[in-house]
Length: 351
Image 1 (cartoon, rainbow, N blue to C red):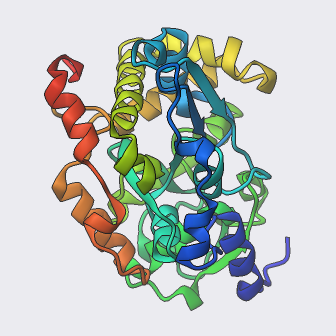
Image 2 (image 1 turned 45 degrees about the vertical axis):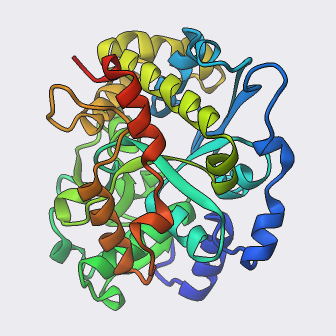
């Protein structure tokens, strides 16, 4: 892999892939289709959700919500879990046009909102973002200063997070050689790159199961606090279909409670059913699920899964502000529905 990198071209591709190369607010509002927000004469209709990636255990809570009938219990006629991937359209565009909700990340949603997209974050599966700096055990990258002089691979969809991370920590990006690497950090194992912006609940586990000595340090542990796997929907849904938003969140919470209670079951339905065409390795998938559960838990024995505290929301806003996103908590988050769900259903908290 060439060490040379055209940052302008990378940013152009990134903004298009990440869903932030969007038109003005009027055009964005016009993109919101009636199908994504309209009601149904038969309950809430289908719970359509755009997933952020392929159907692995990162979305096991939604799989169990579907399998165990939680969407039906909440008033939906069924679920449509739309997979993502390296060639999929931007999540934010899908939520604005064809799905009721989606799963994204704070800097990516923030970039779209700053461009005028009428979107809000309504919850987050992970209390800590799964993003991490991966490196080889023989050449570990343990802290921000270790990044200087290194070549770091970064998928285009993760570039907004990477850009915000460097800005928030005051790093000199001219001293870090960032190169586009789409979704696969294997080049790190043969010395093509020194590190990779990956996910502790997927690529790290996969490479370790292949026998590689991988070091992984969460961005959160480097001083960049973000929640992860955020649920998003449109402002129109929040204004006009609040009960539907709450019903969706309730089903998701129930599904994620099941994942925490039985990660083996979550692994099996992912491998054998929802992700069966991916031919996932069962042992690695189980370890990915366990890694995800560690990100879900916040240490509170009566934790409200998917809920975001005021303090966490403010910390997220501060993190992305360093990357140039001038947003308030109210610009980016609407946490009223998830809090109402737990107020009305206190049994949903972890026991």
